[in-house]
Length: 432
Image (cartoon, rainbow, N blue to C red; front, side, top):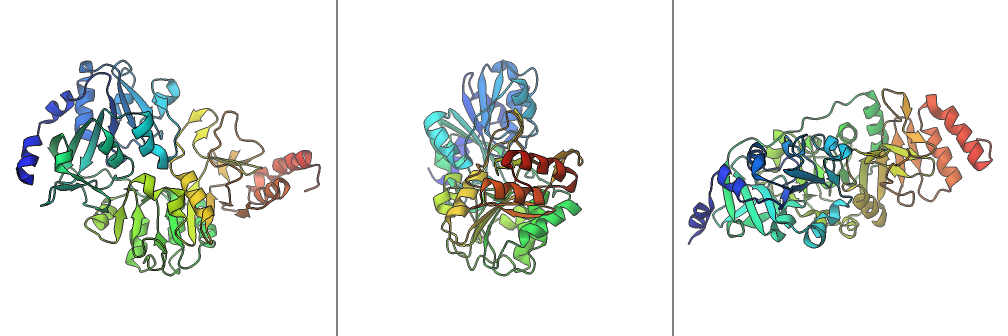
């Protein structure tokens, strides 16, 4: 059979596809905005057909119906990065959380969590039979490669991205055809605090640097202050719309990159249609699985590598909590530690933790004597390099505990400095 005949032989309805999943199966969903909504929603609607189906994925951008109250005997969510629609399930005990570096998730599926069914979303096949994973390569491609059964939602509105980002139609067991826009994530609101943090971070970025940026108001604010930089590059687990603007203005050229020169290297995308249109058939952008993009020994091959990540709390020793508030799991480690370590290992690299100095509308300091009881240490004090707030920059690498505490207090919100100074003087027997 030719590719077209192979494709047609695999097409089934959404209802038929949902019936291919059996009770007791472990089902891995495509990641983030690449989540294949049609089949999982059909399963939720017909929940009585299932018992003890384990749903595994990271950032949930779909409806998350399988994680809602009343679904316990049918589905159990196992999260590797808790999201908005799944957070309550984990905190209430209806779901589980599995800690894992983003770069290790493919290995997790190969060795620790065998995949029964991979539900993925991809582009239609090209003339050679290859479908692109589009916006979600990351763990989605490795999960499909080791799954016993692969069900693909083939969406003709999925952007076709390049790199190591393809699956042949012959490696897909069943196809569900669809046509719908990719989920969009609107840009975050940037306020005065975020602008100040962005400006402080940008002061640490030299011309010809390669950047890793997360998502949200602070990374977007950093991008605002890079317009006078020259020949920046991108090696990041993901990018959003702000990167497109800097490519169009000639700031991001990737010309000076020492690894994958001329290319934006990412593992997934999350933004608006502007980003997806930019990514479609664009040879400047290459996507690879996360165990490549986020491997610290790969990241370190970029000179002047700079990682910028956000966090929940930093204590006076420099320990960083980024994924939990006390015992409550609110997200996951993601790629933070992968890129902190990769940046620290590279020539002229820098890793930056950027955060507002307060939370809860200014009632709580994010620089604290001790992390909240039960909070997970995401990035250890041994790994932390720079910490940035709207009040300045604390460079912790190579500093003693005493020096770290002083530097962090100096960038804390003025309303909380007196209490932090009291803790400093008690702990170090030293006048501040």
